[in-house]
Image (cartoon, rainbow over all chains, first blue to last red):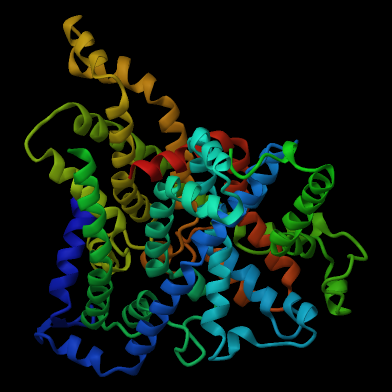
Length: 264
Length: 283
C-alpha cells in the first residue's frame, strides 16, 4: 500500500514530467520541454528564491528554540504547564495559524497596526509578503525545536557541566564549549526537520497569500499545486515537483546514510 | 544541570525570572489569546470598531452557535472525525505488524524496505500529488472520505512503521526467543508478548498521527472538491471567504478546528511529548 501511494507516484511523477497533459486528452511526449519552459519562467525563479529565503529564515527556528529551551529549563512551580503552553502553537493546524496571522497583519484593524502605530499591508506588499508568511510559520516551528532541545537538555551529563564550571567556564564559553556539543543530536534533528518543513511549506501560503501578490510569495510547492489544479498543466506541474524532489533528495540521501551507518 | 538552577540564583534574580515567565508566555500566545477574545466578541463590537479593547458584551454561545448551525462547520467537523479516526487506527494497526516483522525477522531486503520507509517520510509530498489524485479518480474515490482515509493510512504507515520498528528493536530479544521456546506461534508472540509491551508507544503514536491527519490541508484540497468530503481545515479556510468581515465568527470557527488537537495534546501531554521526541531522535 505504501508502494502504491508513495513509491509508484514518485516514479509516475518523474515520467509524467516528460509529457504534456491536461488530465483529459491524451498524453503527448514532449521530452524535456517542460523543464525548458520552467527555466524560462520568471515565476519559477521567484519561487526558487523564496524557497531559499524560507530555508534561510526558517533555520532561525533551531537557535531561537534553543534560547527558549534554556530559558524554560528550570524547575519552578507550574513549569510543566508553562512549557506545554509555550508548545501549544505546534499542534495548531497550518490553516488556523495562517488565519490568525493574516488577521494579525490586517492593515485596517490588525494587532500589528496597533503595535506599530500605522497599518502596513504586510501580505499585500510584494516586498513583505514572504517575510510575513515565514514569521507565521516560525511561530509553531520554534516550540517544536524548543521541545527537542528541552528533552536533550535533561539527558546531558551534569558532571561534565560541573567540571566545566570548576575550570572556570561561565556563561557563553560554558554554553559553547561544554553544553552545545552535548546537544548535537537535538541540533541535528531540529535542523533536518526544519529544512524539510521549509521545503514542504504549503498550507500557510495557500491560506495567507495564495502565492500573491503577483506570485511574489509563491514557493515551488505552491507553484506546482497552482499549475496542476488551476491550469490543469499536469506534466509541467510534475516537472516542478521533480525539481523540488531533487532538492530534497540531497537531505534524504544524507539521512539514509546516517541511519544505515548507525544501524551497523 | 544547565543553565544554573534558579534555586541557586540570587533572590532578586529569582524574582525577576518568575515574573518574566508569565509575561513571556502572554506575549508568545498573544495571537491565540486575541483570537479567543475575538471569538466571544459580539458583532456590535466589531461594527463599532472595538477590535482589541475589552468586549462590551460576551457572545460566546451566540457566536459558536452561529458557526455550528448557520454554516456547514458541523458537517466538516464530522468529516474530519470520520477521516481521522479510521486513518489513525488503520495506519497504526498496519504499522504494528510491519514494525514487528522488520524488527524481529532478519529476512533479505529488510534494510532496503526500512530505507524506503525512511525516504518516504522525507519526500516532498507535492511530488505525490498528481499521481495520487489520478489514482483516486480511477478508483472512483475522488471526493470521498474513503479516498482520503486510504491515502492517509498509506502515508502515515511509513512513519509509524519506522517508529515502531525502532521501539520493538529496543526490547530485549530474549523475550521473543523465550516465547518461541515455550511453544508460542508467531501470532501469539505478536499478540501476547509484543503488543502489550509496545502499548505506550502505540498511544504516543496515535496522538501524533491524530494531529497530523487532523491538521492536513494539502491532501484535503487535492483529493476533494466542494463540500461533500471536505474536512474542517478546508471548512475554516472557506469561512474566511464567506464571512470576510465577521472576524468573530471566523475566529470561533478556527478555534473549533483547533479544539480537538489542543484537547488531545493537553490530555495526553506526557505521551505526546514522549512520542514526538522518541520518534524524532530515533528517526
